[in-house]
Length: 335
Length: 251
Ligand SMILES: Nc1ncnc2c1ncn2[C@@H]1O[C@H](COP(=O)(O)OP(=O)(O)OP(=O)(O)O)[C@@H](O)[C@H]1O
Ligand SMILES: [Mg+2]
Picture 1 (cartoon, each protein chain N blue to C red):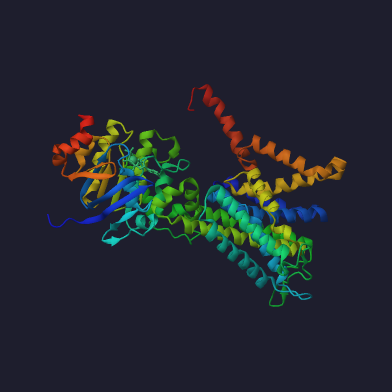
Picture 2: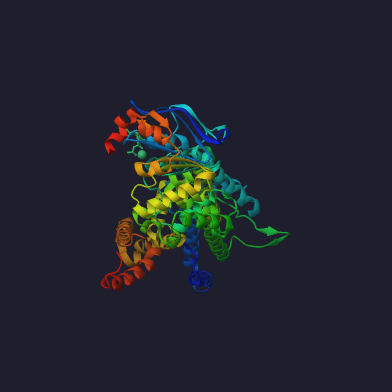
């Protein structure tokens, strides 16, 4: 589990400090890229709660993200800033309600059917924004004025400034991570772990597992919607691709790449995925081949997953186990 | 003795799988202070009967009563919270967790507080005590910090019982708890059953006849889903139909 020892806390503090100092040395491109990655890390964490911690493989996470993002844009009138303090709760509420609705239905299915049905509901939401007047079509919608963040006339954050957005995204990532780390140690978190390990036994012990799974699904949708809010405020633009299955699939790849079952995995996976994507898309490195970036990205990910079944976050554990195993074996130790 | 304190009652329970009637109009009562053994050949429907009583599967017909309340329509978790504990014939544990966490998580079902996201699960003294107590009773005190998946087969069977006890049930439905246990472990488990008997109503499905005759207050014999005899141990042993159908194999 995360935060097991003091070492992990030190490590986490170092990572946060490095991220906090990054804008001092980075240019506009770097700040923008890492802001985007941190928002996707929040989104990946929401999926990790379902897939890695509860054992529910959701293939429709992008829908909650997209709904959160669209809600921000559609609830903002042209030429007038709206306070983030009611815009964000409204958008998160929209994503949460959709997650509650979808969860109450899809959690009646299991395994492959669950994957398919979550995909189907996400596609449904995709078409609502893609093909109905509500979503205003394929081309997407601009957010003409970013929200305001004023308390008693004092502006707390200026969302027009990329550096401010960067720190908002960092704070959101730290808060989400800390919240989930605490949650996973609580009774609720342990119950989810039990459901993942053996749902039958959990029911025999007296846990109404459907209610637990629905709570996890809804919470996950709320966090994904929150990531969507951040994304809409950052890009000031939304389009239906935010809800597309491509994104849902990429998110699954992120958390698998990073390592399922560890919160760190989702964060590392989001960074690794985005950086690999930037690398293979780079004209400077690959020239014309950069057009075929998906091929390079795909092959690399397949290789990494094959070599590291526990993901990048499992790398230290795998290495120390390998180091520990050798002497044990030569001493005729345990299998 | 006055009227027995019946905690669980099955009435004309029937369960069909397609054309097969796995449990056929079985009625039985489990009273506090007694061990009720259910014996029968392989495929007689014993595990299915436990599944019907515990709510794991719904009956095709019949009804189930728990502490005087009709719980036929209750889902399994609700019955468990009302004081029903069961163990599985095929070991059903959390192999990745330690023995302690297996028991603690089971005990957590008594005080779930799922909304308290800021409280550490292992800070709940009630669950921690119940878990340690249950592990000790089942003879696992020395292995409490081991991952459950690394236990011996007998150890897993003990853990199966410990997890059931950790939920502090009043009715225990035990599906072949002694299968795969050594002689010493069997003795200890039978002692434990005797110790639990006064406060609990126990249903014991078991193939080990010596063990059954040592602890059972009453024995029900099933053949092809139906009850052919249900009586005190000596009467069952003497029953010619039972001898022909079942005990004969062992004689
Ligand atoms: N899920 C199921 N689907 C179809 N048939 C089933 C199912 N579960 C059990 N059965 C059948 O019901 C009958 C009773 O099975 P059950 O497991 O209750 O027997 P049992 O008395 O516990 O046997 P054993 O001593 O081998 O454990 C068997 O014929 C079995 O094949
Ligand atoms: Mg059986």
